[in-house]
Structure formats: structure tokens, C-alpha cells
Length: 190
Length: 244
Length: 79
Image (cartoon, rainbow over all chains, first blue to last red; front, side, top):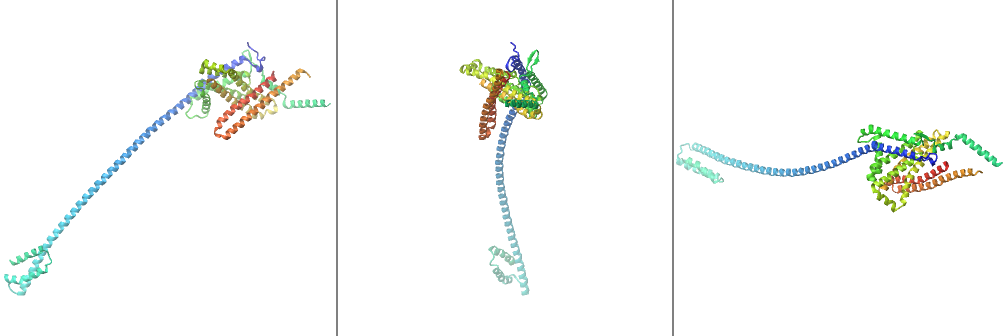
């Protein structure tokens, strides 16, 4: 069975071939279990880890985008609300300002009216004082001129044209003035 | 007279040639093709067997060292040795990936074959006889691939599917039988021719200083890489064909 | 002339013819495939990698024939 190496071309030898195959099998087993499998396992684990990371990343990104959209919606709502509040505030302010203005106008009108009334009263008082003065002045002048005691009839006779003349001077005045001007006359008659 | 002169001239030429180149060329080729057999437990074997055992020992020790010291320190970003190992494993895994179920077995098989062919051929640079400079080694590898092809084919298609391939087209028998022979003779011829050329260069004293540096690049390194790549790729292709 | 000597010389002639003719055929085939591959790469530079790996595979098949010739030559010379 065993052929000697010299008989076969190129030194062919079956036992040697079997030894080589045995050698090769040992080598395959060693490389597979010591080198190939651990490295492959490591690489697969790493690839799996990267895939997981990628999936996680995609999920997180989706979540973040959803949250961002929600936040944007909220911001838009808040903007709308803020605009409404501002409009309301503006309208209120305008209304208040109108009210204040109205009040102020009314006050001003009151003040003006009161001032006018005061002035009218003051004028009446002054006019009365003036006519009294004028009357006393006229009396003194006339007594000085006549150099005598003037009785009531004389007085009437002398003063009446004077007063008539005085009234003619104030003819342009209102009726109320004439009635007021008549009061001192009655006083003088007494 | 003229023939005498001619023979004297050729004799002179042969003498001077022998003087210049040492005259060991044919002996060197003879030694490369048919080396002196060595003893292996009472069996006369080719010294290539010892080269193969040496290669196996180196690879197994390297595997143990890598398993104990390098793989536990693997990082997520490969660098240096880890990058090389991952590149190798990734390449062979990709080559074997079309085989689906068989990939977990075929990947390590072609990886081992490629690493072993590359390493034992490169050992020629150290003066060790390459393991594949013997027809026995090459036939052992060719037959291994033949076994793997048939094993994977049977596992994938079953006995009937495998038989249908041969019954439908009987020429397939010859095609499949030619595969291991083609693989092993290619390996043997390529590595043996490189080995012979290197032996020739070294046998001539004048050529053994600088020339081997240039010659061994073509005959040894180039062949080591190309033949290991070819053996792995062709094995994967033939196994894939059987699995389909 | 010795007949044995003639046979020995003729056997070396046979070895030379074996390696020479297979080398010729393989070289022609390799040249053809390389030129076609270069054409393909020039036309489609992006298919570079695929073409190159296929080319190396094809070259190996061509080379195998030359190696068979070498094997036969070695067998003739050593037998």
C-alpha cells in the first residue's frame, strides 16, 4: 500500500498528502476558533451597536422634532393671545383717555361758567359802588353850587334832569342795568 | 579540420561558462525539483512537510497570542494590528457572504488557506523551502477544497439535488473533478517556478548579491499574494457554484 | 550517434516546445484580456475595481495554462 516516494512522478506520496490534510484541518480549527470567530463576533457586536445607536438617534430626533413643532404651536398661540391683549389694552386706554378728556372739558366749562358768574357779580357790585360815589359827588357839587339846604322837592327837581342825562349816557346798557340803575334812584328819593 | 575547430571552440566556451558561473545550475534545479528526502517517524518525506508544520506552528502560536493579548484590548476605532485583522476577516467574510448558511464555515476555511499559502511562500525569503514546492501539499489543498465543495453542496441541496446536477449533464463530473487538479497544479507550478528561479539565481555566485532582492519581489512576494488571493477566490466561487 | 542520446536530446526539445508554445498561447490570451480590460476602464473609469478583480481572475486562468506547460516540461526533464 505504501508507495515509496521515488516511484511516483514529482515524489507523489499518499501518506504525505494525508499528513498535509491533517495539518490543514488543525490549522483551520485553530484559526476559526482563536482568530476568526472572536474578531467576527466583535465586529458584529460593534455593527449592532452602531445600528442601535442610529435607531436611537433617529427616534430621539423624531421626538425632538415633535416637541419642536409643539413648542412652535405654543409660541404662535401665545403671540395671538398677546396681540389680543394688547388690542384690548389699547381700546381701554383710548376709552379712559376719552373719559378723562370729557371730564376735563366739563370741568373747564364749569370753571369758565363760575368765573363768568363771579365777574358779572363783581361788575354789578362795582357799578353800584360807582353810582353811589357819583351820586354823593353830585350831591356835594350841587350843595356847593347852591350854597344852601336842599329839600326833597328841590333835590328832585335838580337831580331828575341829571339822572335823566346820566341814564342817557348809559342808554347802550342792558335792561338789567337800567333796573339796577333805578335802585339808587329810589334810595336817593328817600 | 573545421569541425575540430568548432568543437574546440564550444569546449572552450563551456569551460569558461562553468568557470564563470560555478557550474551548479543543473544541480540546483535538480535539488529544487527533487530534494533529498528527510525522515519523519521512519517515513521518507519531502522537506516541504516540515515547512508546512513550521507554518502551522507559527500561525497557531500567533493566533493564541492574538486571542489572549490583542482581542480583549480591541477598541471601537481600529488601529494598527486590529485594523489589519479586521480588514482580513472583513474581506474573507465578504467573499464568503454569498454562501448564506455555509458562510460561517467557508469564511474561516478560505481565510486559513490564504494565510497559510501567503506565509509559507514568504518563508522562502528566509531560505526555508516553501511548503507548496511539493506536489503533495498542493494536492492536499486541492482535495480539501474538493471535499468542502461537495460537503457544502450536499448540505445545501441534499443528495438528490447533487445527483441531478450530474445526471442532467454528465460533463459536470469531469468539470468538478478538474477543479481540485486545476487548483493544486496552479499552486504547485506557480510557487515551484518561483522557487526554481530563486535557486538558480542563488546557485550562481556572481548573481547572489543584489539580484535576489529584485528577483524575489517578482517570484516570491508577488506569487505569494496572487496565489493566496486566487486560491481563496476560486474556492469561494466553486463552493458558491455548488451551493446554488 | 547513440539512440539513447538522441532520445535524451529530443526529450529536452519536447520540454522546450511544451513551455514555449503554452507560454505563447498564454501570453496572447493575457495580452488580449488586458487590452480589453484597459478599454473597459478607459470607457468606464468608475467600474475600475470590478474590472480589475475580474481581470486578475482571468489572468490567473490564462496563467494556469502556462503553468500546466511548465509542469509538463518539468515532468519530461525529470522522468
